[in-house]
Image (cartoon, rainbow, N blue to C red; front, side, top):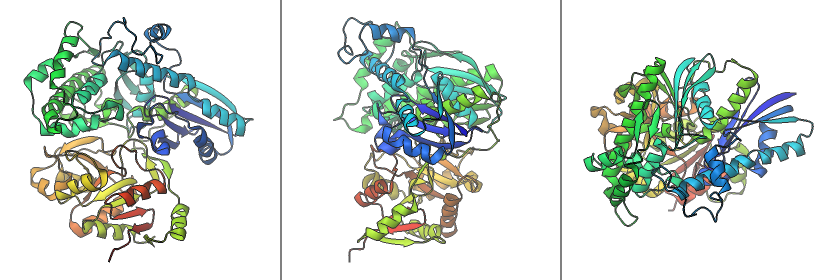
Length: 582
């Protein structure tokens, strides 16, 4: 009988579930939003009741024991318990008057809503799993463990990294007591160097900048700030106001009480409203990103000095800021930087499971000095496509088991836009060649074509280049590996016009390094395209439309394919084309 460790991210946003075995091998890891097709799955359980039976049956054969690990401590902080007793965490109490304004750029009702939502999820975390295990595996033993939130972030970053010794920074919006944790990882152990306390938060700061730009951080639109920033320039007045809202000292992040609220009020006059053109927020986005990079640099440089390590594992929501990630090696004394495929809260499901394993088996080696696979989610079986073939009366479907990459590369070289679905889905927010929309990167018009006809999103949003590792130095300055599309690097000036569709307005690209041993099928496809065009990369963006998560089922893929300007859909070895109108 086998033991399985099930990790849950029971955060109220981006919940997820991960399953590992007794050796720490990842059997499954996926954000709940994929199955639900509900972006970020806000206030949804990590273990949907009608989903978990199928997952246990598929990934946990012969179970004798389950350990369910959560990414938040059940014991809650004093402040949270006090405001709960005052009724502030109920619907009627959310706008309760007479409560002291918290020292934060966000409003009290926003913070209290987050805390209330989080508290509800902690109370109910794992309840669906417990029911299904009791019903279908009554002879199995089941135990529950919970961990500090930032520790689960650190475990995800360090245990999935190629490092045996590294510094680790977790920087996000909030945890049990503060917004950041700093660690030294060595001999498979995580030693906490410092954990912040209080409301000081770089994550909250960036959420406020997102809000001022006219975007919605509840929808995860911080991406838009990063995309818009290169269109602006530094506004000195804005910069001074932002500096008055937050400071970094050592490992601490502080809001100055004497200037915070005055500066926040002054920033409101720069806010872009819905009726205003997006370009109006470009300087705000640039200045907000500029100051973010300064804050992060101070923290990471202090961490490097404290640990002396040349290796950095970075986790937390702020680790999704690829624009800054590509600058870490230049701005700090770290020589190697690793960011996991899922550095935000969905990834902590995996960290919680690994922590539970390590608590029972201290020192168990997981790291193997290699990048661990990000392809850990659900697959679309061939049977789904066979059913489509049997009952479809319109689509042209070809089965090409020996030539699917060559055939797809031909279409890409002709300028067609392709939906590409292969194997297991990526764990994390980025499409890495298994749930991707792909295109020829050579022509600038392609970017607008995809934004307008497929993604239905703003024109300033950039697209990523997925590049063969052995050719990447030819295209990128100071190239270093970016396996999970986690770093933005500068494209060499003489190459920018050759890959215009993936060159952002500032001459950068958020690249994905592609190696044959990481993803053989995607590597083969790009290599086929290279043989035809002499360009060893493809434009790669997530297989979705704006506001929706990555596709999960064949039905999801077909819905996007048939309702957008995609020219063809590839699922495993099947090439699906729309009917020709003569």
